[in-house]
Length: 461
RNA sequence: UCCCGGGUAGCUCAGUCGGCAGAGCAGGUGGCUGUUAACCACCCUGUCGGGGGUUCGAGUCCCUCCCCGGGAGCCA
Image 1 (cartoon, chains in turn cyan, green):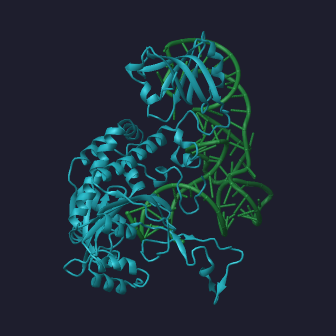
Image 2: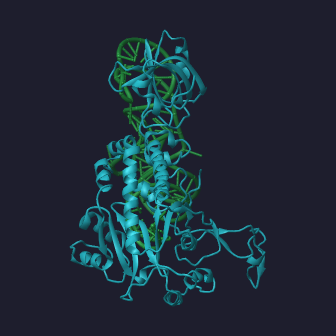
Image 3: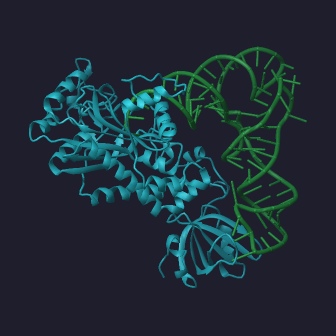
């Protein structure tokens, strides 16, 4: 007899059939005549109620079915005579595969705070909340691939170890095999020629520059992989290791880029509603921070567009008492972004055409000479979820920008080659995967949407 | 890194003016019931984050360090 997942089991199809279910005990309720077990197996938001009659041979096994124990149960699926669940399994055989000492098992038959669960990351996926989050995370990851694959994008694998430290995307983690107790020096400086790669190496902060050369050969590509930032950021929306999706398209401008970003997000909202309705409903009821209706509405409506200049004028009009002054030329602060999404728009918004001074060197200079073809997708509560742009494809202008900002032209000759030989307009963006999951699940802290969060001082699991 | 708020039983938290260390939940035992985070009774549970100081006496006041949370900056 084959084992059946709870996800498949709870249906009329299995009524009256003998089945085997494996999982972990959530709770046990005992009485003289009956015992009830609640089992979860990770396949579904639903749990399974197992009824054990005191006349069954396996009744004595109940003593070992403490919270956390792993069990294999053989029995018949029945329609449940009591309220609270539609189906249940009437147990005939119970095998306790792995016991769990109730005095030591940290997960109790009660609610726990997210902070506490963060300290037991190796067990928290057994809870309703984290089960829901990680199933949603999986569905989104899969949907991301489907979206791009359906549209002819190639998944490309950009390096995790890089030598370029000039993207300005943040602080880098060094990668080295040098012996810290005996660091080779030359002229009082670290002699990297003796290091593994013969020069300094780092963990990647972005695969964009590599994605660009692949797009300028293959047409449409995307990356989906881990990214590392060594900033000492202690916030609810930063991780030191996170996953990023970076599509890049040749023969495309900012409008195409925006359209892609919008279609992309709408598709993901739609998919998660179709495939994770139970998970979303659970999170909605438990934390009251998301609404299925809202996500559903988002999956079907166009995003608002606003230029940076318009945004500044909206912010100046407002009577809000901002901590940071609003000035054309300065970057938008969190409080400004929140005001735009929550008060002005009331939903996600795409802000475009930022002053060149607040954006990266590779963004395409607009005809006005002072703004660049950039776009940020801002969402309520989380803030920036996507940052993208049309890239500067004109060699001379790009060189001038790099000089202006002080970026080594020498080290990026390969990047400039793309403008020397068959340059084309191209555009792309970066989506922070965890921020997407955070936005959709409504989790306050980004550390709760990734199995093993990496942040300053946090590398426990 | 900066600004706030915290750290007391396994978990969540109360602890007044400096004077015997508390509750709910969890756990254990017994009872009871097709039970639903069951219910009822009883029982068990402490490095009050670490170190130093003031005091007859410190969970409580002072200094210091560590850790956690929220906000900010940096960014996705």
